[in-house]
Image (cartoon, rainbow, N blue to C red; front, side, top):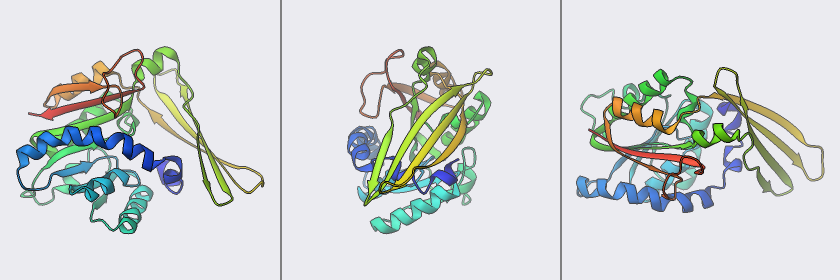
Amino acid sequence: MYDSFSADYDRFVNWQNRLAFEMPFLEALLRPLADEAGARPLRVLDAAAGTGMHVIELARRGYEAFGADLSGGMIERARANALAAGVQAGFETAGFGQLRETFFKDAAAPRFDAVLCLGNSLPHLLSLAEIQDALADFAACLRPGGLVLIQNRNFDAVVVQNERWMEPQSHREGNAEWLFLRFYDFLPDGLINFNVVTLQRAGQGEWRQKVSSAGLYPLRQRELAALLKAVGFEALACFGSMAGEAFDLEKSGNLVAAARRT
């Protein structure tokens, strides 16, 4: 799905607005780690970096920033974005469960201070066992006391309320126009099929459409909390969005979980 979607992903996301909304909360979480690190810059890994925009913004702000993604198309786009932005950031094609072996081929390499997993990426793993393995991989990449930050949809609310459709997105470049429609199919086995319909036209010409799909495991708050504890995380705090408001199991649009590695 994401190799084919990588060419349009930066049209789908309004990065200027998203980063302005998310970065104050993210840096508030990182600030205590900076106090612990002293004079050195924090090392931050985005484990589902997509086109690299969070990594690039962190690099702009003085962090030693790295990104990984299973999609080679996304990583190719991320490297091009970093080059265009004029920042130094390291990107590797690697999926969940492959991060330690990718970034720590040299056993003496310093561990990360923080690992991010944003954009509802973790639920693309389709079983609790796979998710636990991914969280263990995050822990292996972190120094003791390091931070993991996970942003998912609040599937407790999504499943109960049968929320199929998400807000449409649109984008214009010159006389070209894109529309992005996202919806869920709830499957009999309890999994979810995530669909993205991309509509594109030039001027008043005919719309062309493309449909991409991926499976999701609807990860609940209690499941994520138990898995984090099982792989050695503590001091879990949950929020309702990347602005940092309190998490409401029935109403929040997102589940944002922050925890420290023991």
